[in-house]
Amino acid sequence: MAKAQGLEGLVLRRALLSRLLLLTLILLWRLLFRPYDTSASLNPSCLSSATAGGRLVPSGPILWPRIGAAIEASVVWDGVYFVRIAECGYEYEQTYAFFPLLPLCISLLSRFVFAPLVPMIGYRPVLALSGYVLNNIAFLFAAVYFYSRLSVLILKDPAAAFRASILFCFNPASVFYSSIYTESLYALCSLGGLYYLFSGANTVAMLLLALSGSARSNGALNAGYFCFQAMQHAYNAIIQKKRPILAVHAIIGGVARSICVFVPFLAFQAYGYSNICLGGISYELRPWCKARIPNLYGFLQSHYWGVGFLRYFQVKQLPNFLLASPILSLAIWSIIHYANKLLQVVQSLNMHDYNSFAALLSLLGTNEISEAVGASKNSSSSKSSQDHTVRRRKQERKDKSTESFQHIRLTDHALLQSPQGYPSVLVLPFILHLAFMTFTALFVMHVQVSTRFLSASPPIYWFASCILVSPSSTSRRWGYLIWVYFITFILLGSLLFSNFYPFT
Image 1: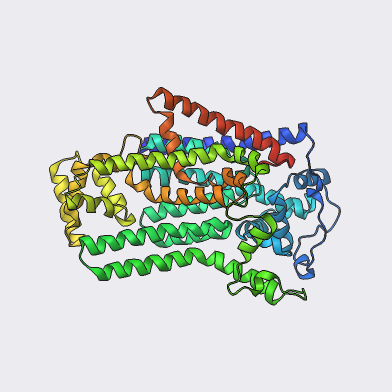
Image 2: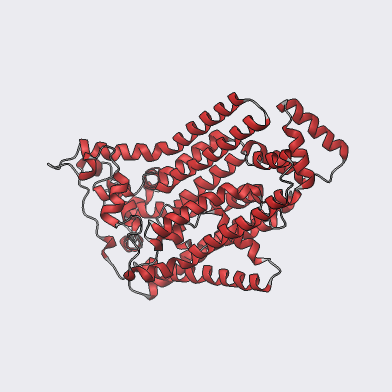
């Protein structure tokens, strides 16, 4: 326990070091190079007088105008939209592509925490400063959750979890986690939600995963974890417990939680529909308003950004495919590696032994994960301790599933806890999620966004942490290339992104 706490403190220090490094690099590149686009500081008045009335306006002249101007000029790319939304609300149709959690948090911080700075540097710089502070602090918490909560729980290997966490701290999309983007908030909510989900705290998990859906559109995909959980519980209820009514309860509960994760996405689409289609000032309805099922987000992505299946497969986009190739290769490699390892483990099972195979599948139900893996970890303890555990489980569950767990605990220990932890069966739902995200990034989205789109996916770092310590000389070379890739993108990202040049 003391060692784990020590590693947790070390992860926090490394996360803090990575943020200080990123901010230092950004300041350095801004001083050495002139930004490609200097229009970020242009700030016309809010369209709505009601929204403008809520702005914090300095009563006198700004005390430190140069500092305020420097902070304001540092806001680039999507950060311009987020600061504008925090200041003026959703004024234009295309701004509804940016979800409300980050602008809302920025607005609240600027009003209740950093309001005394408004007379010194101005209101818009205070909004930007609030975004920087919020995202960097959120990243620190996300890094701690990734190590001491989620990775240790799933991998059951503190060393592998520590390596994966260090890789996360210095990931290739690091510049976005220290900028006014949604990556940090999304990572904190999704990683925290997944930890509580696999710990059995479904209500807390549901709330955090719903928050991730109010930060980024792909947060709604986290509902898939509840669907996966419901299917496993239903299987366990029907096959092992022989109680179909419990399967119905599991499915209803899973569907209800999944819907709750989707609610922020649906509510925000309804909010946009109300403002644009019902309360808009345009004389002609927008095309998506007339659709049988209005899809604001899909229309925005297609109309303004050209997003769609295979629409990015053009010769002129080849440089962007090359830019995204490292993260896509790492993601695909991690999926294939996991599939091969899990297939080997499944083939090693006695497939004619029904109890063993059933226990394997039921272990994926999150309520049994901690208990089953903990039992596997302690299988070498005294027989009296095992008997006590069996009696307690029989009393709690009153069924025969314990015998299956006992069998898999003794004969298939490698399945639950491999040397590096990555091939564990517990990683399967993460791999399925990553596979869907990778497919979407490659065939539907602007492919260069893959670097940050996949940057909060745990299996990428879990797999890379295994490669770093593999005894194979080939794997060691790949581990070296992974670090070179991460460091190169940190340097390139801090240089290009901060100076308004295209990056990802």
